[in-house]
Amino acid sequence: MYAIRRWSVRHARGLARLYDLFEWLLVIIAPLLRRAEGAGVERPVALVERTVKRALFDCRMCGQCVLGETGMSCPMNCPKTLRNGPCGGVRPDGGCEVVPAMRCVWVEAWEGSRRLPEPDGILDVQKPVDNRRWGRSSWLAEARALGRKGE
Amino acid sequence: MSEGGNDPAEPRPPPPGYSSSGRLERVLRAGRFAITAELNPPDSADPREVYERALVLSEVCDAINATDASGANVHMSSVGICALLTRAGYTPVMQVSCRDRNRIAIQGDVLGAAAMGVCNVLCLTGDGVQVGDQPQAKPVFDLDSLSLLETLRGMRDEGRFLSGRALTMPPAVFLGAAANPFAPPVDFRPLRLAKKIAAGAQFIQTQYCFDLERLEAYMARVRELGLHKQCFILVGVGPLASARAARWIRSNVPGVHIPDAVIARLEGARDQKREGKAICIELIQRIREIEGVAGVHVMAYRQEELVAEIIGLSGVLKARGRVRGRKTR
Image 1 (cartoon, rainbow over the protein chains, first blue to last red):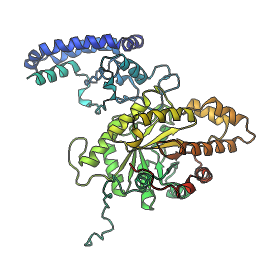
Image 2: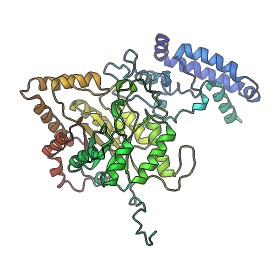
Image 3: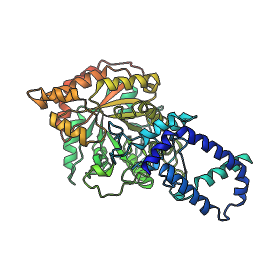
Image 4: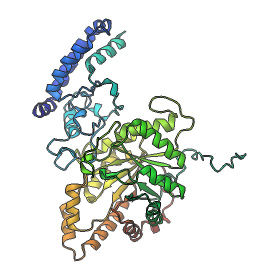
């Protein structure tokens, strides 16, 4: 929901903290998830992730989450699905070029990123989306990557 | 096939330290004030319509921009225009928008363009389909302007497609990007320029500038970050036909910022069209004085003759004969 999405950006700092806590949890259960690879954890985890993140961020389940770099404003809500910053069409009032009633996702992202403990993630150049990952869990991918790093 | 490199079909590699063998890069690296202009693509299959416009522009500019369905309106494609222009010895800047083609199509187009002799590619996100003549179209946006820049730089510098597959000959292209110093979030814009440079942008063509104060503030920040030494910035300018046209552009063309003072000045003039031209010439002359600006990009919808006249009257061409030894980048 639009109002909740904007609330999430306003509370980007708190949510980022929550995410850090969550990541710590993921590191603990990472070995378990590694063992469970291919054992049917993908679907239930993705379902939980979809439900939570849809409510908070209007998440589209691109499967390669960058909320931590974009001030908790999901870039996939941009009508041009831009992952590296605002296009040149942002309206003087901060409205989206394509959907004027919506605040530009990247105006929100810039403001949200200023509230993050690590505000400079927004300056990283993001790779293009891997379209095979739509609908898959970013959390699991993250946990598995962390697990691999920990080994 | 001839021996000793006399084969006219043989591609010429760029000189050492250059990305391309094109005129635009040479002019910029020589520290000359560069001029580019936009060719309005015809709604026609007649090549003469392209050549007539190119002839007018080529006398006053270093490179001609071939737009890629700008404003999401269908016209002759940028690849098509570039094919015609390179065939006749003009220097085009091929605009590539992410709106209509996915990564597979774009990489192929750039290879083809480089093979034809295109030396400059401008990487754009593209206007949304809703502003164009066919809003029913499916917006693609598989890449964005930055991932497009990175993709093309990888093809050129590493000789690889995005997939990692090797090219037998990389495209020798000078890479450009757009910037809009006038749109929100204003304090993020210079950092976004830094991002574009990090992704591979070597030259920048900005959105239309009508607000010198904002441009100066932007350039001050750009200089603070040292970005003007890492890329060549060409500022976009163009004439406004009347106060009414200015108002229409302001509310209908995405990303164009026109201050009230400019509209008031047009309204107060006896001949609004003439005033619009005068404003544009003044802007060019003042933009030229801003430290870190490497050139201007002149655009006027379907008025190539007017573009040529404005560039001539601004005196930038005459002045640059004297500009020598400015620092190269």
